[in-house]
Length: 370
Ligand SMILES: CC(=O)SCCNC(=O)CCNC(=O)[C@H](O)C(C)(C)COP(=O)(O)OP(=O)(O)OC[C@H]1O[C@@H](n2cnc3c(N)ncnc32)[C@H](O)[C@@H]1OP(=O)(O)O
Ligand SMILES: O=C([O-])CC(=O)C(=O)O
Image (cartoon, rainbow, N blue to C red; front, top):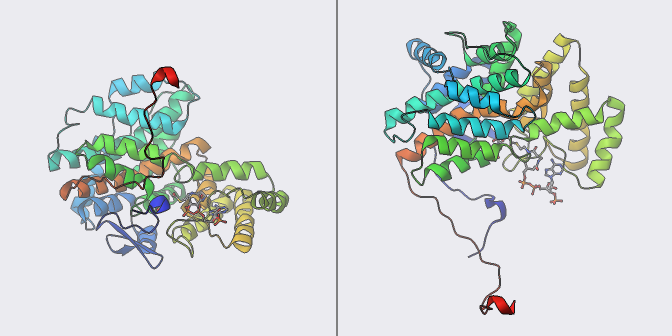
């Protein structure tokens, strides 16, 4: 038995949700480029869960259900209020989502329809949790979602209390579409491993949030913004990047386990970063990002991934840096729940083997002799 480090190249399951073939990403066979330009996030959620694009009635029904299910249990709001203000936001999200299960009577019901209802509640409540936590830690009251509004509009509204501009809703919707699913990434795999024991959907999503938190995965978007802030100005980009690469420090937002010739989502986020920068009159983050890309690609051949330009996009939308990874979860929860439903449909326990590298034939030494 020989282990493959990081399971690189190992095909661990079949799935009909999203594919990465020759560097092209599709959701249910539809190119991400088309979805990014043409789809609402709710259409994508429907596509991921039910395998086809919704007709108008189906879409309206999903939008209505999402806004009807967005209210948080009072006990979860109390927990958010009792949470220290300066905690890690992904640790907070992980805890609040876990708490949701305690107030959901169907939490441990394994019926297919019950699981779809829980997927809807999770998708509806995650944006409400992130917005409520952000407001409560600033000493403000949480804002109830607007009935009938889509998730992009509602999230920005619940976060700020202001009607968001159309361009902000459009950009945020596109970011949600681009982050919704990504084959067997680490957090999705974590969710599938968890529910393959026939554990519940909340446990699967909590596992996934824990995996997304790390800077080698979803946490990279916050790390990118921290880097841009540390670099500070375009003149400092070159010495900063040279120094990091000379010292073998990874540049966040670059490289990918699967894409070696570039992440197809990055160009959409780059374009948005440029447009929003121009619109807000601050193109500094975008220009610094472009210069970093030139250097890292030139020196290491590494291309930006989905996390690189999303950092400057969210900053232009005036979203606080430590909400970037929770926002990733707000979108990826659609993919996680689609994969969880798919796992239940054709389940087998996921239990690989380990190549043992420890000592053998060791004698047991009594405690007095150690
Ligand atoms: C949504 C997402 O999860 S997208 C990914 C988000 N993560 C990041 O942006 C973090 C930075 N990137 C990385 O750490 C990696 O590229 C990962 C985690 C994305 C992929 O990791 P792996 O497939 O295991 O690649 P691995 O880390 O082995 O890298 C291969 C080589 O490229 C180098 N490399 C990879 N990424 C980077 C980077 N961002 N900066 C500098 N060098 C890098 C590695 O040091 C390694 O070099 P070596 O062969 O000389 O040791
Ligand atoms: O697929 C991966 O390894 C990481 C990624 O890009 C994602 O989850 O969107």
